[in-house]
Amino acid sequence: MKNLFKIFTLLVLGFLVVSCEKDEDRAVLGKPSASSLTSDKTSLVLLKDNASQAAVTFSWKAPDYGVAVAQKNQLQIAVKGTNFASPKNVDLNDGATKVTFTVADFNNYVLDAGLIPETAADVEVRLSSKLGENAAIVSNAVTIKVTPYTTAYPSFYIVGDASAVGWNATTAQLLYKKDNYSTIYTYLENDKSFRFLGQQDWGPLNYSLDTAGMSYKYFKTWSNNLVASPAENIKFTGATGMYKIVIDADATQKSITVTPSPINNWNPANMYLVGTINGWNAATAISMNSLGNGKFEYTIALPAASEFKFLGQQSFGDLDWGNITADGNTGYLGPKGSNGNIKFDGTGGNYKITVDVKLGVYTIKPL
Image (cartoon, rainbow, N blue to C red; front, side, top):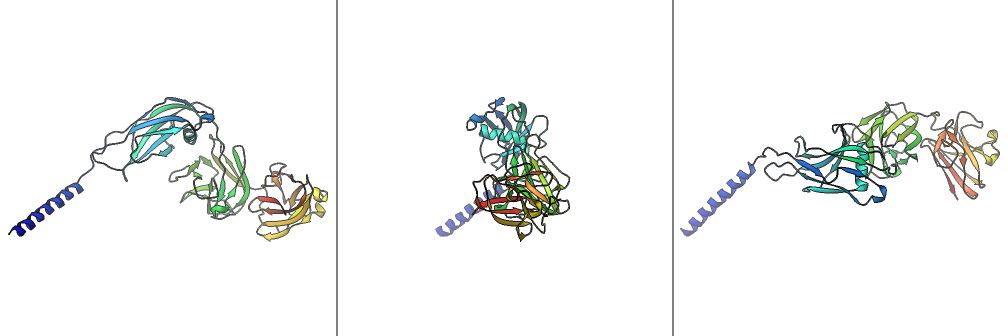
């Protein structure tokens, strides 16, 4: 009898435990309370010399649903008056109620939000809290007058099946950068996609169009032969050929323009060297060895202070490539009308000269 009583008691306790678990399963979320955000600063003049110092601390109270729930919290930073139409979103650590940004970090955030370097302007900051698929709940907005400083302009590497390098990030092609402009004359293929990386790797930096559905928002304006494409890419809608890509990384611009190159031949039948190495006589220009697909090479003894250009014929005709924009030795090709002499700045000796018209680059390497 005693054993039967014990078994009965255990069954009753088990039923009560299961009932309690089912009651907990039936717990529902209450109506969320309002969230709030405060800042310890109302005005900031950011200085590059203080980059590692603390700039501003934000404290917040996330919405309360009556039960413990995991929420995705972000700070949204936007130029005042834009109604957070295109904010800079900064993810916050789970469970945190406070964050302090360094001068360098906050400077980057406000520049990404659209502030102009060295110019005081108001930004608004608010807390955005999202629970699952529910609409985000936003806090009050705090206003801070910020004067950011100019940072180094980013580098841009093109990658994608619309480009000459394909989707291999380790061979992504760096554009020629001078001040806030990055430029290259290169091949683009119709109805295919590309994007820009900040390094020859998929992370951490990616750059795409600042439009709905994109995570890597950067370019605020773009030419009409570019459209947003799935998976953070940019689709090229122009005809297949050679194009000039220009990126203006100025914080007020962040633009990309793609226009046809003056020379739309990415695979010339011949390539010749002309310059001080042959008295600038185009009729006796030196024939380079073709490697196919717009690539050529030639090994030659180059005296110090040599200058030369590439020709597609033994005359100063339409097929003419030199250093991009002006005299120099940048390693980037510029077509006729937008180039200068390639100025060899070595000490003399034997060198292998290579040129890749499709990619828009050349090299001079000692043997």
